[in-house]
Image 1 (cartoon, rainbow over the protein chains, first blue to last red):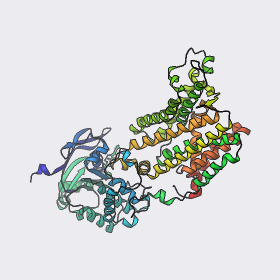
Image 2 (cartoon, chains in turn red, yellow):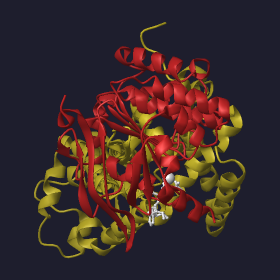
Image 3 (cartoon, chains in turn brown, yellow):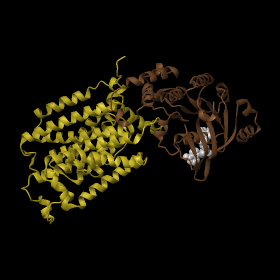
Length: 250
Length: 345
Ligand SMILES: Nc1ncnc2c1ncn2[C@@H]1O[C@H](COP(=O)(O)OP(=O)(O)OP(=O)(O)O)[C@@H](O)[C@H]1O
Ligand SMILES: [Mg+2]
């Protein structure tokens, strides 16, 4: 099998410039179909900015984002989602006044043009995805309460569920375990591992035990640049990686 | 499970208030004198506009301080028609003659046709509202800036009307109407008929909005209000939702303006500028910005109070209203409806 045929996402020399400060500095990485990848790096390394750039919230001043062979870095945001990319935000972005089920219904809808929303109730065709997702993220019992009333960890799961329910092929999960205890973190890891080969996942996280549970290759960023890539063990043993983390901690 | 699951607000609310209001509305013509009925009808016209604010402000998070503009467009459209309808062909309205115009402006001419005037009442505010909202939201301008822009719009509109006295009637506005669509305005039967028309439009607007707020459109509007980024990055273009909602509110304001003008027999800049536009928001804040019935009650009560207070102490009214607004917004953010129901339906 050829590497090119399996290539899903390629971030190619992307620079994001915040009035002189480069949050991403000629950053490149690639992701294959069905691959799960963890991106780590000290605070401010540019991990969230990487997600922002892929989904079109932030536009690169240089470089390209190629998804399934198409340059998506100039597409409108809804079009990028339409291509099959969805992102969980670092601060949970569930919709507080909508019920858990309605949150998922919004995500599960495929035809997102406004005039298709003129109708009552959740369309029958979306129901299966919604109920399956509710089971998957363990919120079936909580389906009718407003999203804003969920506990912090449950909000994270709901948003992961929303991202899954869009049917996106590439999921960007920005710190999905932030604020979770060890048991919840393990459940989240299982959830991501259970996604299967049809999805590619880019996970950003600080929690090394979570990263270990995922067992996925790790890309390390530092100051907007690519630093290292390898297995968790390799990255752990790497003196450069240790230096940037220690340098930051000190 | 049934095929369609109604969204939470429909299932939860057991609305007693709308039925009470409807009963009072139907009873009113049998109990009120012509003067009071006319007053009530004006306030009901205002209530139609107020429900539009529930849609955009309460459920869309879009604060408009310029609804007077759309109210005015509807009001002037019907007023222009009535000015022309009462005239022998080829003549100009009185104020144009007085300000020395030679001929009727071309854009006045089609308003002689009742069908055109009706279409203008419905289409002009809606289209203008849609274009304006799209232009602003498309640039990702929202929140306070949006409110300020709408206020500037109200100021500009009122100023424009005042400054073009020869074609708009200026500060005095348009008044002295004698008939509408062939019915003499002086006859009591017309007054009662217009009351029933207003009540019917109010009911239709209420039912239509209730349905819309319970629909997926309403859900997306609320979602956009609470987390526009999240909605956008689920793949929805959020601008159309806000634009359509704003256009509907503009439509309701235009209809309200036309009905009000029929009841009041006058439309003038004093009814549509910055201060009246802010007053409209106050009705809704007091009644409850998430509740259609609350907005109706707010518009009726505040206008009733205004009528009582301002005839006795005209200069006191603005202070009183300002104070009421502050008290409600700080202590009862969901308004009277929130006090009654304790929920947001
Ligand atoms: N809108 C912005 N304007 C200016 N600077 C920004 C902006 N957004 C992010 N930055 C800066 O860009 C850098 C990268 O931020 P980013 O949020 O991508 O880091 P991160 O790796 O996700 O960090 P964390 O682990 O804290 O989430 C930071 O120094 C941040 O201060
Ligand atoms: Mg981050």
